[in-house]
Length: 318
Ligand SMILES: Nc1ncnc2c1ncn2[C@@H]1O[C@H](COP(=O)(O)OP(=O)(O)O)[C@@H](O)[C@H]1O
Ligand SMILES: [Mg+2]
Image (cartoon, rainbow, N blue to C red; front, side, top):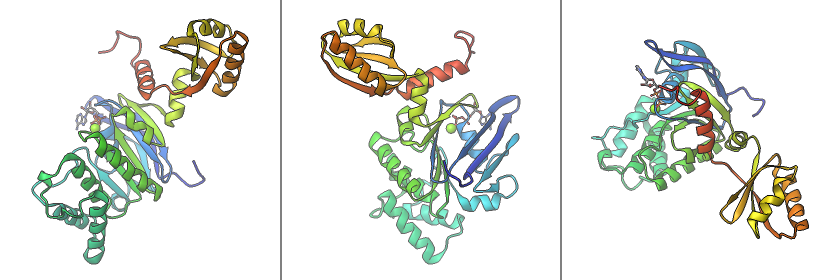
C-alpha cells in the first residue's frame, strides 16, 4: 500500500486448543490507516486471532509485530498502542456512562485534565453528551456499542481491534458505527474489524475471508467479487432479450449470457471492451441496446464459492 512498514505484521500464526486447531497458520499485513475486515462464520477463528494480536492469548506458533513491537517480547509497549473492543463490549452495566469512561481512562493511565478532555471527546463521539449519568444497563444496543468504542479509544491508540462490534445492533446504528470507524481511519488509525455481516464488508479497504482457522482469500471487496466470477459481469437492458441473447451468444467477447427478467447478464473479460462490441452486435441485428452496465457479484457469492472449495467435495464435510 505504501513504503511505510506495516502497522500489523502476522507470520505463521497458529493456535491449538488441545488437539483442535483453531488458527491454522495465518500470515497477513495491515498498512497504516487501513481498515481490514475479518469476515467469516462463527467458529472460524476470528476472536482467537484478535485476542492473540492484542496479547491476551499466547500463540502456539508464529510471530506478531504491531507498530514494530514484538507482541511476545513487549506486552507493555503493545498495550499503549492498541485499543480493543471485545465481542461482549465489556462495559460495566451497573456503572454510569461517565463511570465507565473514568474506569477505562484509568486503566489506560489517563489522569486529571487529560482524562476529562478525552471523556468529553468520547461522550461527543458516542452521542451521549446529554446522558453521562445514565446507567449503562439502561442504554440501547447502539449506544452501548458507541460507548464501548469510546472507551477503547480514550488513550488515542494507533491500532484498533474491533471484534464483531456490530453484532446485535440495529441497521441504523451499524451504519453510524461504520461512519465512526471511517473517521478514525481518516485520522490514520489502523483498524482490524471482524464481522459476520456480508454487507459490511464493502466498508473495509480489504477483507480477509476466514474459514476453519485459515484465510481463504484476502483482497479488496471489488477484487474479491471479480475473482469469484473469473471475469466481469454486465447487465444489458434492451428490446427482445431472447433474440438479443441469441445474437450475443456467438460474440467472442461474451463468455456466457443469460436472461434475467427483462434484461441479460453476460460474463465478459473486460466490461468496457465488451460493452462496445455488444452494442454494435445488437445494432447490426436491429435490436436497440438501451444500456450496458457493469454489475457486481455479491460477496455472499464469493464467500460461498471459496468456503465450499475449502471444505472439499460436497458430501465429505462433517
Ligand atoms: N479457550 C478455548 N478452548 C477450546 N476451544 C476454543 C477456545 N476458544 C475458542 N475455541 C474454539 O476455537 C474455534 C474458533 O473460535 P473463535 O475464535 O471464537 O471463532 P469466531 O470468533 O470466528 O466465531 C471455535 O471452534 C471455538 O469453539
Ligand atoms: Mg468471535
